[in-house]
Image 1 (cartoon, one colour):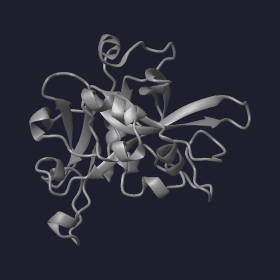
Image 2 (cartoon, helix red, strand yellow):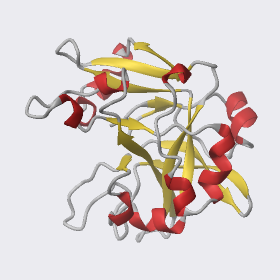
Image 3 (cartoon, helix red, strand yellow):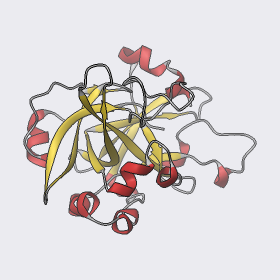
Length: 234
């Protein structure tokens, strides 16, 4: 589960993702903050700003809640179950796929027995384009339409380095941990992700070669409130 990433600077956004919107966003992203994401517009693309944490259908507030009214964590969508999910199924079937610009993202390493944040960046210095889904929610009190988005995650039990992230379950075998990672998309695949069929999009959900990653422990002591959050301890 990824619950922290950093948005590229405006020059990088323009260079790689297109014109930036007028709305404000958070550069250091954590759940329920507003960030930019790229979605299809006609045969092209547009960069818009929305809440990181998809708002389910019929949620009474912008804070994601389930049918029972309990709060949900919707910043990450598991690729295995999203097609049938009450929250993600509609956007997936409708082709409401998006690309999330990230200069880097952070995952928790537990190899020493305690949580150490590890940062993942691209080896070529360019920003990541992470696969996601988007939706729009209308505030029943004000009529305001609020875009929201989620990051898709995939299993990485058999992927070196990536399978070191997150706390291991001692009751499960090493290859049955269900460790999760994000879905980086290469630029040449962006149009297929945004405009292609469900089948064409499905084949793009994979782990890229590890040579594209730069990783290492990172001092995030300035984000104490983030690192101590229940989501980040998972």
